[in-house]
Length: 423
Image (tube, rainbow, N blue to C red; front, side, top):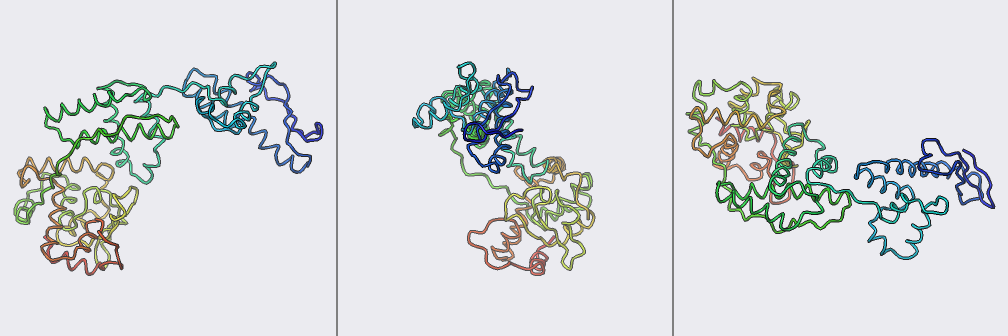
C-alpha cells in the first residue's frame, strides 16, 4: 500500500487484487485521503482500503442466484459506501443534497454507472420474497437473544409453539410471501380456528396462542429485516372466559391415597422423589427437575433447596428463592442428593409420566387434578396455618403487589412455618 501525492492532497495508490477483477475494472486504485498530512493519511489509509474491500466483497456476494443473498449484498455495499440501504421510494424523498451524495458515490465504468452500486445506493435492489416458513428459519437467529440463559429443554419449549403456529398457518393459508399476506388470509386463519373451537371443543386460548406466536415470528422478521411491511395482525384474538383454576389435592387425599404404603411403587424413582419433594416445598416440577447437587443443601443447619438460574432461566425474578426441606420432602431429597438427571432436560416428560401414573392408578382426586395441584395444596396449607402473604409469595416464587422491604423471613423461620403443616 503506497501513499502518494496527487495534486495538492495525498492519495492511496494500490493494485486491485485479482479476486475483484470481475467487479472492479480498474487495475490500480487512486483513492484521495483528503489531507496533506502524511501522519493523518497513514491513519486513514487502512480503514479506507478496508471499506473498498467491503464494497468489492458485497459486489461479489451479489453475483448469486439467491435473492436473499443478493439483497443482503446490496445492503452491505451501501454500507461500505457510507450509506444506509433504502428502498427506491424512500430514496426519492431524500433532500436533494443527500440524493446527490448517493449519486456521486456511484463509480463509473467507461462513462457508465456501475449498476450494482446504483441499485445499492438508490434502492433498486429487488427485495427477496420471504415466505412464512422462511420467516421462521430467519426468526431463530433474529430472536436468538430470547434463548440466552435457557436450558435445552426450555429452548425446545420456546420453539415448539412457534413451529406449530407457522405450520398450522401454512396448512390453512399456504406458504405465502409475508409481504403478500392479506387481511382476508388472517380472517381465513381465524375462521379455521373458530370452526375447531365450535366443533372440537378446543379453547379460545389455544387459538390465541397460535395467533400470538405467528405474530411474534412475522413482526420480528419484519422489524429486524427492515421490510417496513404493514402486517394485518391486529384485532384477531378470541375472547377467553375465566381460566379454570388447577384444583389442589386435599390433605386427606395426599395422606391416605398418594402416601399410602406402596401407592407409588410403580413410578420410577426420580419421578417419585420429585412428586414427594413437591408436597412440602410447593416448588414447580421443572424447578425440582433442574436442581443440581450444589442447589440441594442437605448439610446446612436448615436443609433446603436453592431455586436459582443454573443452566436455565427462571420463570421470573421472583422465582429465585430458598425453600427449607421438611417431612417427606426432606426424605425425598436425601435419596437424590445429586438431583434428577433423568428429567433435568425434559421436565415435560416428567409431568406426563407422573400424571399418567396417577390417573391409571386411581390417585387423581378428580379428573381435573394434575401433578401441579400439589403446589396449590402446599399454599393452601400455608394459608390455613395463617402464614403471612409476603412469606407465602416468597415461598411460591410469586410477585408481591407492593414493594418488598427487608430481606424477608430467615431460613429458620421458614422451617418452623413449613414444619408445622408438613406431611
